[in-house]
Image 1: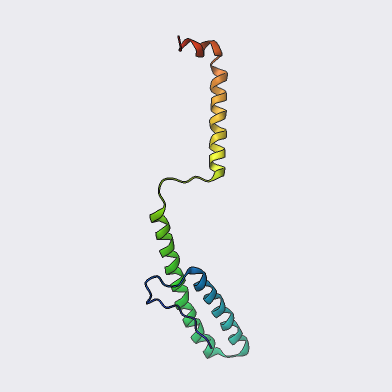
Image 2: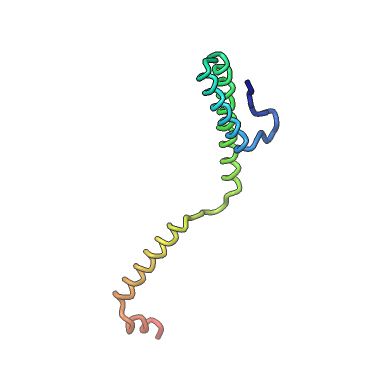
Length: 109
C-alpha cells in the first residue's frame, strides 16, 4: 500500500498537476483494494485520499488567489468583442440612415 500524501510543510506545496495525479492513483488503488476484499487497506487509503483532496482544494484556492492578484484591468472574450463591434456598427448604420449627408455637412460650416 502506498500513500502519496503531499508534503504540506513546504511553503509552495506541490503543483496542482502532481496533486491530481497522486489523487487519481490513490483512488484507483483504493478501488483495486476493495475489489480484492482488502477493506481495511482501502479504508486507510481513502483517509489519506481525503487529505489529498483537501490539499488539492487548497492548492486550487491558492492558484486562483494568485491569478486574481496578477490580473489587472478588464478582459473580454473574443466573442464578446465581436458581438459588441457588430452592435456598434449596427447603431452607426442606423444613425447614418437617420441623418442624411447634407445634415452632417451643416455642422462643419
